[in-house]
Image 1: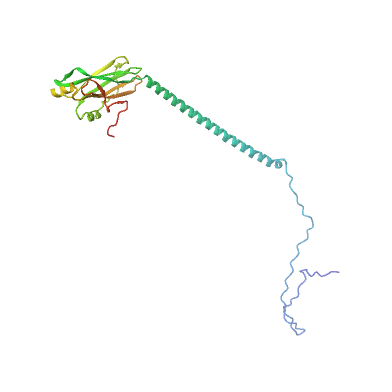
Image 2 (image 1 turned 135 degrees about the vertical axis):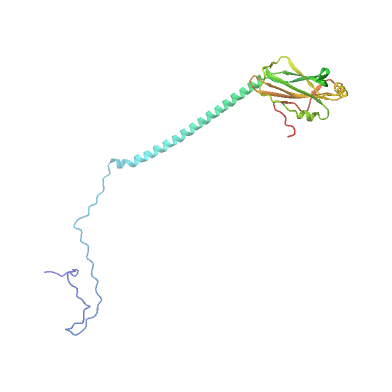
Length: 268
């Protein structure tokens, strides 16, 4: 016996929308079409088999190896940074030590040169004998200037530049003295035994002025510069200025015109 399956699509569905039944003479009611029922999915005839891939030994140990690699990389980076800092500190310490050694050596060398070099300065001044001297048939008053080397080594090429002046404009004249250029020394050497001297003449004077200067009724100034080199090849100069005390034969140092190696800057 064959049963009819209501879900079987092979069975035609009666069209209820057709025209009125001509046999019965009456009209069928208009019924909206009935939607067809979707076909059910076919039943599974077999069980779906799922499987999980079995991991080998590398898959099991790979995370641990990667972790160990990260740890070792971190340790290596830390040691590298530590070694860099240690090397940098060592390099800085070596640089500082070298700079200190150089500074000490330079200081020692400079100290040695300062201790061993020549020191030339004026020791005293005295009126010439006779004080009235003639230069190019003109009367001048002359003063002898003596200098000596108090250093441990000789002065090379010592040159004594000296002048004498008097009157109210003497200070300005002394401060404006032009120092000659002395680029290279000659072969003469001045040791630390004895002294050397030179005569400083004034400008031409008349008889009355000469008498006042000789009798110390009018002050006379002697000034100039001593130029020389030491045995290390360094140039040095000593500026000097002395004034004769009124009514006396003594000369005393001026309040200006004296310096040692460093020239004063007057009026600046």
